Length: 293
Image 1 (cartoon, rainbow, N blue to C red):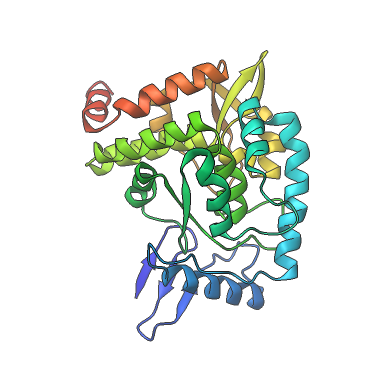
Image 2 (tube, helix red, strand yellow):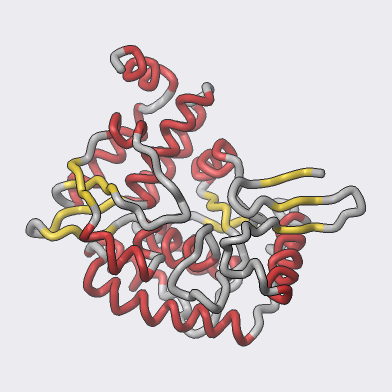
């Protein structure tokens, strides 16, 4: 058997059947119809060959309704809690709010803005493949959507996270340049330790980063901006000044609301500091900070 991903790994059996292994605490664990949908959508993604048309997913009315409900709840919170650049990029991208877009449609909207396109994956991609794809202006995305019983939360990255969170980010040309720098830094991070450190910094910046607007935290990270629960709670987290070394050492749990975040003083500082870090990061940087730890 072959396992792909970490949380909810996708298992391909010798007979060709595909199963997404859901943990017992997953909202969809006891729903056989949801589990079959996950298996079917995972199979489509596993069969994808780069360069071919992206597999079309025939979403159900229930799945479209989850997208619509979450989009509406996120939109009102974005107006209040998202940083200015994200809101501007979101307005430029103009994702549909009433129905789940196909990844091919997301690419058509995004590519003219920053050159990025989407590629389907069945689950969590290996770190090197995921971050390395950014250097090709490519973003790996799942195609399934969270369980309808808990539309405000998902313990794993679904299409709402991948598209509402990351595609809106990537519609900002300056953020897109930072993603490119992340992809290039992967080429310089050949050791497992350096790659893991890079992943942690990405988590606390482009996934869960905040900036201060007149002293008030505003979210620019996709993990916050795609989660109703995170948007409702992130300002109550312990918010520390940006520190790349501490980010690379901080533990986190992807299935919980984040209790510790790191902030920057402004959008301008966010662009400059992140681009500078990812443009120089690699094995040498990691060895230097490891030597003084």
